[in-house]
Image (cartoon, rainbow, N blue to C red; front, top):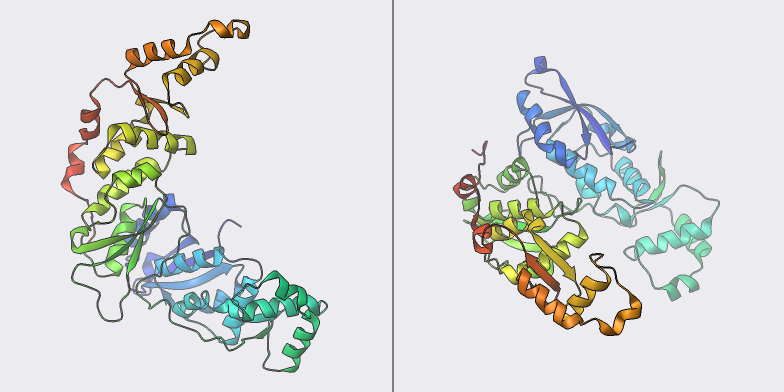
Length: 402
C-alpha cells in the first residue's frame, strides 16, 4: 500500500459534483493537480474545512470515525505525513488512545500524534519483560541510559503497571494513558513545523503586521510548488509574498552557497527567488553539489538568481575535487585523466608542475579550497549569472490569492 490514508471526498454543498478519491500524503508532483481537481468541485480552500469525508481507507482503522465529518485537504495530508513517520509501536499507541478518547475530529487526531507516545499499550502479555521495558521508556520520553535498562526488572515493572489499574481495553491493545494530556500543538489553522520530504530550506513565515491573537507561524519547505506556497501563506493570513516576513529555520544548502547569500536577513519578497534557486538545485547529485560549492567560490554570486543560474548551467564548468596546485593538476591530467598513455617506468621524467601550469594558462582555470575549476561557457561569467528570463523579474505569479 503506497498510501497512509486514502479518502473519498465530496462537496456537501454541491453533491452533484460527485466524489474524488485522494491518496495521502499527496505525492509532491501531484499536489497542484490535486488542488485543481478539488477546485473544479468547489473544494480545496486553504483554511476552511470544506471537504466531506465519505470513505476512509487506511491501516489506521481508528480514522474511520472521520467518515461523515468535514476536513481541510491539507489537514488530511499533514496527518498522513505525521502517521507515515511513526516508528514501530507508535501506531498501536495512536490507535488505542484515539479509541479510548473517542476521537472524531481531525484536529484532535493531529494533536494526538504529538503525545500518544506517552501511553503504554500491551498487545502481548506473554513477554512481560518487554512490556516493562517499553513502559519505562514511555515514562521517560522514549529514551533511557543503557545502565538504567540493564538494571531494570522489566517483569516487575509490568506487574506494577497492571496491578495499578487504569487500563482501557481497545481493539488495538490494552492501553494505559500514564497521565497523558492532549495538548493543542495544532491550533486548527497553522500547521506545526514538520519536515517530511527532503527540503533544501525551511522558512518560518509570519505577516509583516504581526500574528493575530492565538495564531502561530507557518513553515515553507523549499522547493515547493506555487500552490503550496500560496496556500501556506494564506493559512497565516498573508495575501502576497511582499506582505510576509521570512526567517530561515534550517537549510541543507551547500556550505559555500549558504555563505554567499545573506540568509540572516530575508523578506517575503525573497521567497520566489529562493524557491527558484532551490528548484534548480534539487536535481543535483551529491557530486554536483560539491561542484557547485567550488563554482560559487570563483563566481562570487551576490543573490539567489545568480546561484540559480550557476546551478542550471553547471555543465559549463569542469571541476576536479582535491586539486590545489599546478603540480597536482599536472599529475592528475597525465596519470588519471585518461587523456595520455602513462608509463610508470618514466615517472621521473614527467614535469607535472610545468605541464599543469601550461594547462591552467590555456584553460583559465582557478584553484579553490574545494578543488580546481574551469569555466568554458561562451558568455562571460558575469553575464551568465545575470541571464535571467524577463518574466522572473516580475515577481511571483500567485494566481488564486485573494
